[in-house]
Picture (cartoon, rainbow, N blue to C red):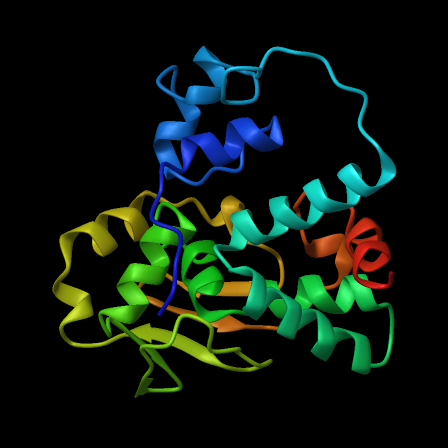
Length: 208
């Protein structure tokens, strides 16, 4: 599976905002955005007036980087969203939000989406009691996310789950701390997707 393997702090600096790609580190003074809050590279501090195309491109790149998706897959998600009923941009965000790795992150089983993606690929999670090791697997309303026998013994997953407050869990998800499972109560609405992405700019970019 293709994935980005370069330094992720540079991605935050390029988008000029924290994308929380390193989990807890992003909340400390070690975060690259705290120490060097400008675009990476020799001319990073130079001011440039952004064009409309630049704004559209940056919004698409930000969405890709937040969810850890490369261009080919992201475009495929857009094509699916465009064929669905409703607003294309919102449909696109709903597709990204309902990826299994993103659900695992939201439920508190991992400190970052990258960590969640790795845990899913290692086969630590189940969907409706069936082992699933595909990070891009799309969950549905009513699905129950749990741990495999091996996953329940992984200390990193257990520590992350215990340290996650219920107030941090999105309202469209439900967690049973005793059973160590999560449930998809409903598919998220745009108001329930707490990500600073201007999806209309992405639609404008792909509509050209």
